[in-house]
Image (cartoon, rainbow, N blue to C red; front, side, top):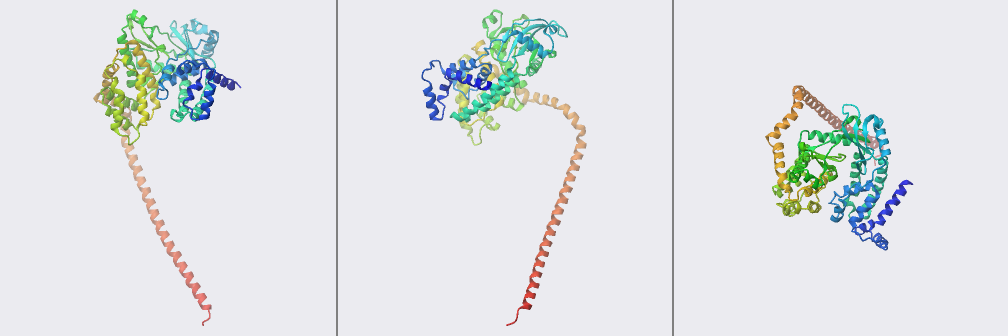
Length: 523
């Protein structure tokens, strides 16, 4: 019953904001298209379609807001006007009751608030679709007196999200069957990606682990600061972390007044991004302005502070090598190498002409070189790249979708901080140094150091392993020889059996002829 009521609510909101009209142009069934067109009469649908879609998602609640944010990164699937509007979505959910939040904290920690915190502010300082944050001071233990931030999940979120995800599954099936491009858009795969992301965010211990990993990766770095997680107070529904002090990166005037060099800040942001992606293969994948602060403390002025680690991306060594070579070839305007890398990776079907792919990539990338960020739209570049991808049947790699989303976030931050930033000139030296470290002599030494412990364990075992291999080989050869001998004996036996059967048959025929012949009267 509750699911039915929720479905009716979704249908009502969708009808009110004319979401059926957004789908009208893509309906392949002419009868359904006429019905939707007829239903448009009497509804004031004056706002642009992208704005109506954004407002409808906000009205439907946090799950749909999250879905719209994720969908906004799939510019290969959406028209540009809708993707741009969805990119404006932010978590606009009011905080839940403070008494309920405190009960959830006590339930998660299995301790009273007063036993854990010497002071606790019941008024949240931040509220999002999944959780909200309170401030406090730890009362006891090795971190007593520390100022902390306490993040607590909204109660009942898992059941709400699972219920709405079931509805999204059903909607994806309808989209796939009714839309002309439904199969190409793979809506069920999109919903599945969304399910994994949301379930990861619902486990706050996973977020705490992500933060700890990033903190280790940037230990001692003057560029990025990650809050410390206090593991004695981290549970699936509650985490307690070091309180961070800084200015939101979107408040440019406050940063200028504090003496922060915005141009340097923009260059540092590019270096942090490429360091996470290529050095670590582990990157913060939710870098919108609400999650990035900047320190104004004189001792670390201009240092980035990252928050909210529910969504991170990971890349394998193969992914990193592929991306680094592509980026470097791209920065060097070696479009033939970019095309060849796509062919070598198997992302492009065999038989694709290298010169045609090279020409298409050149047409997309050449116009953006030697231009400041303010004159470049990564959104338009990505749209053209994906159009080229569709033309050449390039396979979309799911593991790179979060990277695409993060790159768009980096573009937005760079555009805010320094519109004159030359992203290519800033990134190229970093990538060249990374390639040199990974592929050159230094990279060889590093890999030898990594593999040395394994070799030290295996080398003493080599004689025994070799003897076992030889014995196994000799035993295998002996078995094969015996099998061959059995096959030869069996074949010989079969031949003698055939001869015996033939002689027996001949003898029976001869006896029969003699017997019958002796009984036949002579004429």
